[in-house]
Length: 363
Image (cartoon, rainbow, N blue to C red):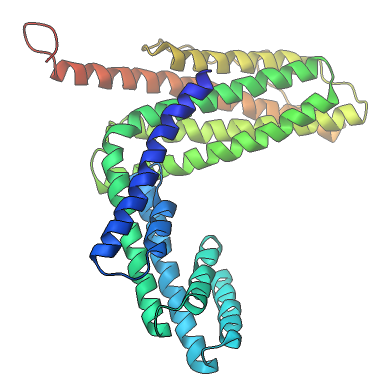
């Protein structure tokens, strides 16, 4: 139920942004007399992102892809004529250029522009290319405006819940892995391994957005409703949560090898996993409490973590190394979680003080 409520809150604003993107892009396209209504709406949808700066980055890719696609389309048509051979040559050339310039992420956009220009003509090839670029520009501008407007009241709440959900997911998988190891259940360990890959990819997207927040802070002093100290904390948390996911994934892979080879699992493994899960649980409780917390010294599981000596099986060496790195990541996560919640609480208290009259109460 908690996950559904949190997702529903995020989904509500996302759906509103998508609806506004389509309506505004179509209205502006009609007002500007642009014949192509598909490109503005589709581009605007692609550029609707969680942060303003991420949307700007995607919009830049859209514009560059549209320009590159139209240029290659016009060039190949000039050489081979306006026919299927020209389209095929343009597709091959565009794919080659994208690979050479490391534009893999924009390749589909470039190829879509090529196909669009040839297969949905709105006049001559040059006129179609011009209309396509105009439509893309309208979509980028509309999406950027929507992302900017929503950033003023969405960042704080959005990143609080995204980080909380990521931590809760990590804790759930830590408990699941610890339980599977305790029961020596090979299938359960393998299943948790697959779930960890999915969570790590989601957190990776969160980390990419958090780095965009730092760039956005250079663009405008305070991004949306976030205070400056919170932004590096969001980046640190998301980076270490992603790292913890991959190190826990390494633990599961080593455990699978040990269990498949019927090698004895090191005795301290269960203790270490439970201690790491306990640190992660403290971080989750810090998010759930909504109150500033006290710092606690990092206590690594079982004392100092020592790697196995030479001559031990490679999976056991890998297991020890991954557990050591996982412990460090989760201890760092707990540290930054406490700082994040303290800074979040201080910022909210300062905001309330600004709106509190001298006689008490609120305006």
